[in-house]
Image (cartoon, rainbow, N blue to C red; front, side, top):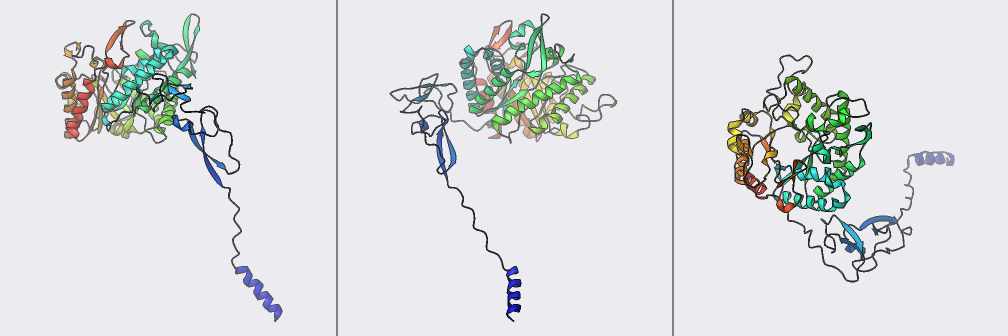
Length: 483
């Protein structure tokens, strides 16, 4: 019986829940503030300097013991280069200085009380293009340029602009564009007395300055929307003078390099604005300036490749701008006017070669003048622009909208609008957007004062020379329509 009892006890023990093993002892953690300047444990003075401490977790008993030997007394450390005072968030340029007496807070870079941005209001400041593609390559003036760019970005944000557009690069080999032409994204060198590009090698300085521009815009609460390329006349040089066997802007292999460039720039945006950020991108600025149907369809193929091989990983079609300015005689639609009677070699149906979602979702843009009268009377496509089935459109004033004298600029039979005319134009477009149940984005091409330099008009870099009555008028128009 005893034997049977043991067997029964053994069998029962097999079904008995075994106690959980004793948990392994977990290490005890502590958090310490580490000075990002010295890499040592922060002292109380380290925390008085912007962005000079970082919380780090350590196993208790293994934490570092050495204390910061840089910030050893009040205000030893960073000061704003401009004011020589304690830096604030918007102080981009800082240097180290040890002082016996504490300076006050920087009086130059005050934090603005930004209003809510207007999603339907974009700016296109030529300065952001020329600043960072021109003199910014000269380190002697880079600081002044960045300070001017920061103030321009802050002011544009104060007037409601939610995004600033800008050309990504220009290189046409013209002598009048020398200041810009050799600052393209690719490395170039002299060969047989000519400048030749290597499209397999990106120019590091180009991307360093571009990233710096994103830092400035982000500090001011602004987004940046690159124009990936301009029409061939402005951007052809690298594709006609290179060691890569490409002999033309429209060479299919040229698109491969533009895909790589698009991805590289989008990666910079992702790093600065976060993985969920949607990049605004215009693949091609004024691509078919009065061109015919064949050229138009080739351009749509270009857009399709840039989208499918690059942009699709970084944004959505609601942030992809298709510039239809002067395409096929001024027609500004994708769907209605892309029907092709001879599909064959050029087109496979409506939209972007059968991709119907493209013509429904992408943003259609057209350039024009800044007065309501010229918009309604001078362009046959004005009504089509407003009534197209596409739900999002963008109307951008052309370069002539820049205020050279604050009163408007003559251009052929038209006169560019002053601030009140821009107000009337913007209000009209947004009222029409309400009427046709669509969204219209208004783009102010530039509000900078222009000066002649090297045979071309360039913005005066001083922010005080910008005519801010214009963006104020457009901001006022939006609030009157949408509240």
